[in-house]
Length: 143
Length: 252
Image 1: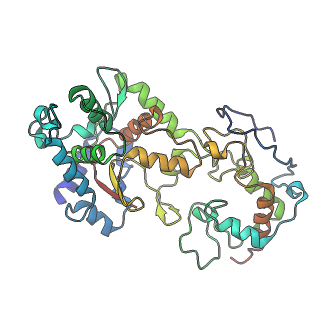
Image 2: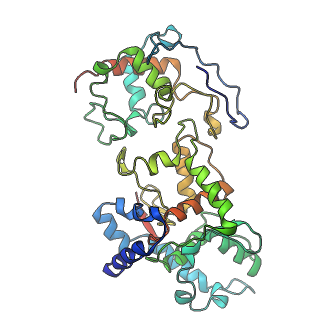
Image 3: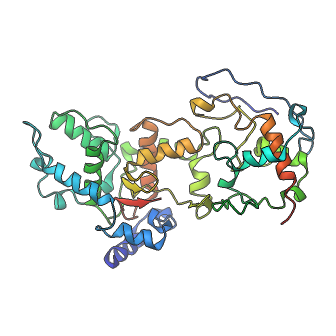
């Protein structure tokens, strides 16, 4: 990744060095930092409004979640449409595929502007959380 | 209601701003019930603030003249005034919104301490003055001295910001009508502010609302009255040119 660091103002803390990853086509084939994901933990990240908060834009097969967004594609069968590596890249930084995307970059700290002090230098999700969400999404296979 | 609707349609046709015909007021995104409630002064809780502001407008504090001492017959003399804010202040050359103008009168002409953003007094007075322009078309000046501020506001609107890396435009132009959780994304024109928001359980300023948007994308929350929000307020008002002022609006 060759993201250029734009002016981010003064950082509240030194940027966390994110685990490096390699892109192949539209995927990041290898798990971040070699971590293995846990689908149950991933589900919690997806639903948690302070972490993934994915339902603000996406729909998932969770009948107890009444308010689900319509901005991103429905995720009920996303595990059948995309493999783990493709899911991973879209979570890490979907703008690598589409510069105009509204999907936030969940594993990126560079090239962002006016980040709130409490989030500066931090990715929206850490490597373990990314892997957990990949594991959860990979199991969604019923449209 | 029918008068207002007719007025709105007439003005929409008359306006020269190309976007005004596409951009809809905040009330267009409310449920019919909430829309009725917003229109009904007896059921819109924002009018409690309007009443307090109206009372304050005539009240003297100490030696200072009351607002009404200079602004006699405000229902006529200040009708439409709110539709022209923010505007460039002739004295300072700086962009000033309705809150800023009230505070300027308060400190410079009445020689009283400023109320401060989100104080009940400033919210009340702002809501009262805005209510005198209810249903009238937004008509801010965007050329001349206002142009650099308009451009700055457009830049704020269009640039990605925050950890979630989103611009105002991405949601409020490109995804209007879509659902963000249970909420429908509007054009974000701000013509209902100060507004009574159910989430707040009280009336709040446009800048309070903008700060909530900043937080939502995990971006720096600028101070109330900050240049970034003032410029953005002008840009939003320019987008809303010709739309009826709705304050006190009722919002989720």
